[in-house]
Image 1 (cartoon, protein in one colour):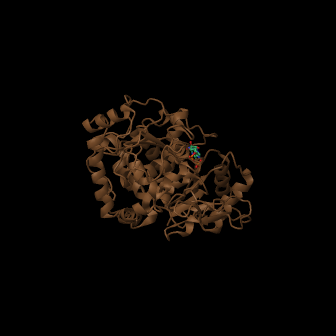
Image 2 (tube, protein in one colour; image 1 turned 45 degrees about the vertical axis):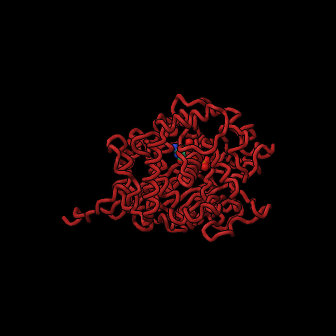
Image 3 (tube, rainbow, N blue to C red; image 1 turned 90 degrees about the horizontal axis):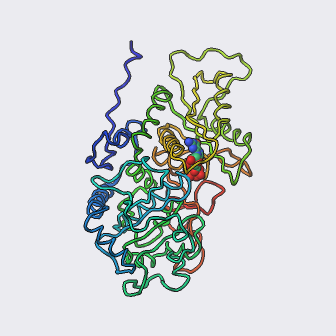
Length: 482
Ligand code: GDP
């Protein structure tokens, strides 16, 4: 029987072109080496320079990781309460902000900042993120240990305007960009406040002459909910290095996300069970992510129309025969699977009913599935986050992806999958229901417009060819890599 003779898939490269270290024990984190089987083949190859950099970063992290001699030395400096200039091991500690998508935006950006500055990335892992991600660096840990001298980060000391914040020290003239901080009587660490509400002083972080200043601080604590990588591409000191690391600018999140973000076995169970049960057998997988933002809600019917109009107009899904009585679909042809993710169940139900009650014009059977509908965002709940991460991964296995403009949840899926999504736009003032993203990179929503040299705001989308404004139409001031 010829239909059984499916072409043999070439074994997928489980180390992703050398991106992943082979040094891990596979069963301890199945997703690390199994994900490649599920993603569409990527035509984005990591540069040899990036691979080299990641291996040397791993060695650095092993040398400086928690409880090593060098780490203990840096801890002594932190306890001494004064700045001593750079040490052998310098750190940037990531602090959470926002939903899972936002957190992953800042995590990837912070890692990029770490490798550009030979800093070690450590995470203050919030309780609701425990046991969700595997350790990404072999033989060490990226989690801030429980005996770290600072125990609490969810305090005013680590939010905007705190006395230890870089922005505040600048404002109070305790610091200035370009100064030699080694000789000044300065605190032992700096807090960088880079969330969407960062003020003009905080945003001086993105200035060229701030970079040498930061180097005098062995400890940086960074809080952001943004994908700030594009702005690092506008800092001249990093130009050469970034060019070598990412000759293909639109693959920054794609490579770094695939390198860093491995769901633990418990999360991976959700992913693989769902995939095998509903998606594996399909001839094509379409992912549709519908996000309704509570602070800028769109009426259900309007959003549903946008989603349906987009998928039909762009021929992502077939139209239905409304008048003709439903007849048999072509037997023996594998169905198309549509994976809907949303906090609500309505979009899924409407789509499923549409293809249940009518036949498609192409004769295709369309299966519509939704893994969960959590109703409300509950980032403080680990089980809720597990589903969010599992669904980001499931979406990333799509052949074609439809996301909601402005949603970082969608950005994670598109970046991991290496997919340029169709972004569903808000229904107001648009003449098109969706727009194809021109690159798979996330958007830096609240990118600074300030030009440090010129001392005024400029259009940052026109400075270099590979940093432009995002296609999420409402967010014309956002920046992304192309
Ligand atoms: P954004 O707000 O769309 O940029 O994405 P975030 O991930 O930062 O925050 C939204 C949060 O709401 C997610 O992290 C989830 O906790 C929840 N959420 C939103 N959409 C979905 C969805 O489709 N599926 C699941 N499981 N959770 C979702």
